[in-house]
Length: 90
Picture 1 (cartoon, helix red, strand yellow):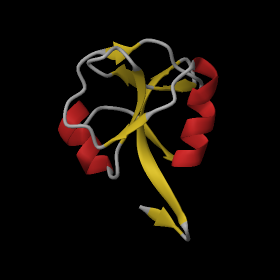
Picture 2: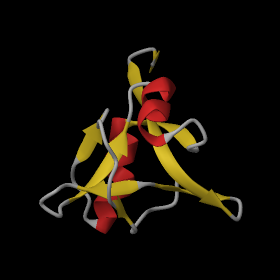
Picture 3: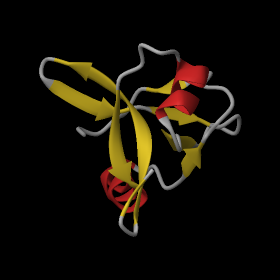
């Protein structure tokens, strides 16, 4: 999905109390990782159709995750197994 030259990612969030927080995961090594998808249908195939999401640029997502020590973004993962509980407001 693109807006001009800006590519947007479909980013899963946890929603509640009028806020949304970017959902993170952990790699098998234990490293925390941001999770994003290139389309809503790819997100739904991995996380289910009811998963809330927002659109973010990769740069914005990196900027939001960096303060909590998440330096990697995994795009279009095939499996989400272990949610990482730390998140940042979206």
